[in-house]
Image 1 (cartoon, one colour):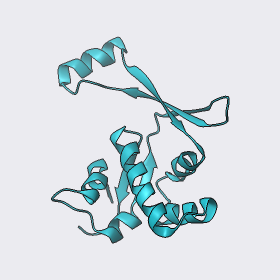
Image 2 (cartoon, one colour):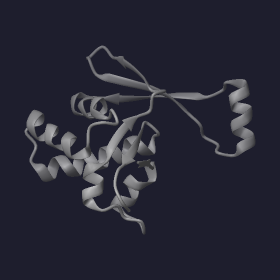
Image 3 (tube, helix red, strand yellow):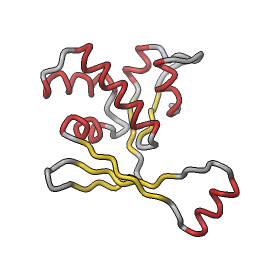
Image 4 (cartoon, helix red, strand yellow):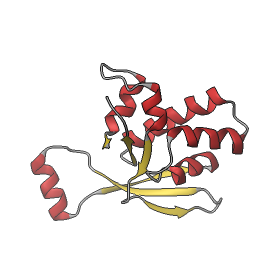
Length: 135
């Protein structure tokens, strides 16, 4: 089993396109460093650290100084449902079916919105995709 955040974005575009069957069978996994809380309206809020500079020397100094910037990501009802399903066990296909059932979405709408949302979460470093099967 291999997990690569890049594979999700390559599913949408790129030379190493992920086959739709493999994408549907992949399992999103939450970043364990993201801290969950709830705001006044009952929305889920994720707090996580952000590294801006990817140069090795800067990362070393940032870690030594513990000078990471934190960000918050607000999740409303549908986003929270998807986030909680990103347990590394639930497939993308199962999450899409859950969206259809719980939020009365049609299949295409649920799959498209879910793919875009998972891509956003992965770009922000909040999830990774566990991709199962042959290339």
